[in-house]
Image: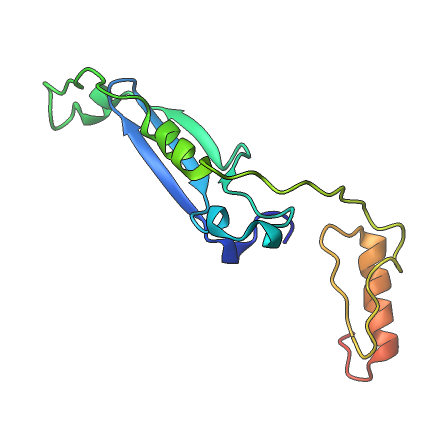
Length: 146
């Protein structure tokens, strides 16, 4: 898996804003901002910012609820977006770790080679690299699958 580390704890906040006909979504880790700074790495993210990690869904709540409540009407908004307040609290006193440049493998042999390892999995590997990995496994193990 490349990206967010699951042990960092992923939570998602859904804010149903009836006044503005929106559902706002924020994905975050409550754990990452509490980690000691010297243990943070590139994959530690307090707030996830990808298109499928923070987004807004337009929703006509009056139409949606109209089938069972013909008189539904949202109240006037009385506060700023809760998602924005949550983001501010999560990021208070937190700084993202420095990003390290990720480089693709130079060739099918560009991986940490550890004595006794029978197979190596490279995510995102090309078909040729996967074939090379299977061949390497077959050569090194008498019980490797065909």
